[in-house]
Image: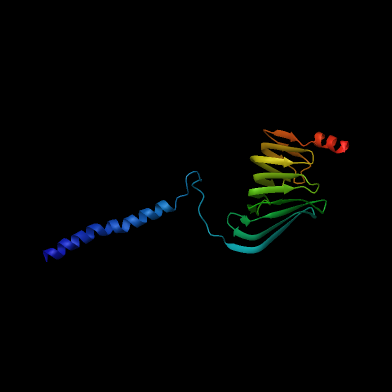
Length: 195
């Protein structure tokens, strides 16, 4: 009988540790990674939509069209996370600039869009903006970013950090900038004229 009690006391002494160790491990795993706000909680989307499309109209005028091959809808956050978002802006009802990125989020309550992972914005006249990330504010009809940016125009390349622009790229402001002018190679012209 004593052997049984000795074995049972060992079992009852170890049992709480066996129960509490896995529970302690679970609490640690649910914490957000360092640098992420404690309010961020991992969540499962309410819906997953293939071939997601949204068209926006302001005062009856088509202002933009957003497409994504796959969208993850988070209804309580009023957010739709996007894979490979493509947005086409419209100027006076006609197709204008377009933007592509690897990832994005569309905010259903404001119509704002956040894009990242290789954002490329191209105007209808061929100007091109490349940046790691950007935010589109629908109410201001403005694109902004604090990230690095490269703006390609016909005669120049502009690099900087931090930028804002109209979606059609008619007005671009780049902070902390460095401009490179693209000029024809005069030497090559002289060589051709000699022949």
